[in-house]
Image (cartoon, rainbow, N blue to C red; front, side):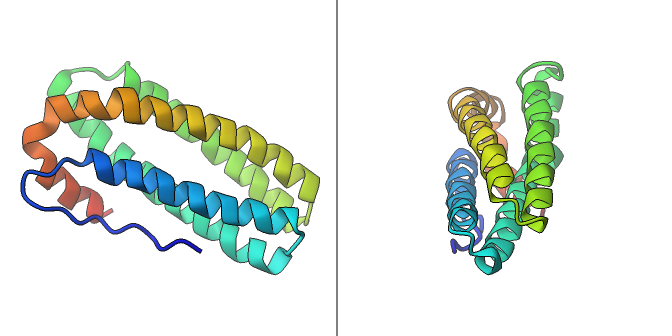
Length: 155
């Protein structure tokens, strides 16, 4: 199973590579959980899925509690890209809850159907963050990069 990502940085480093790396870490944990369920290895699935879920929740929290409010305060944009990202986080949370319920029932087909939907949403979401929101935030908050990393690491 993948290790959890710890934010490390050097002076003048952007937060964008770390958030993008978290996407990769979450994706790897997702694959572990999905593969375990596909193989009906319920013991492995019951370890892998909660790890994936916790990594996703921590990533969402870093964005929702640190990055988004800081970006909104600096730019005055509260109904734009951060609003869209928060809504997508909620959709993903709902799918993860449904997947957890399927896992509890050992419902392989239900879990895999929900995971297919989640995978599609995660891919689209991550592309929007990495190609649109993170560059916008980096431009607006570049002078706060190290402080943002420190605050995100505390979440």
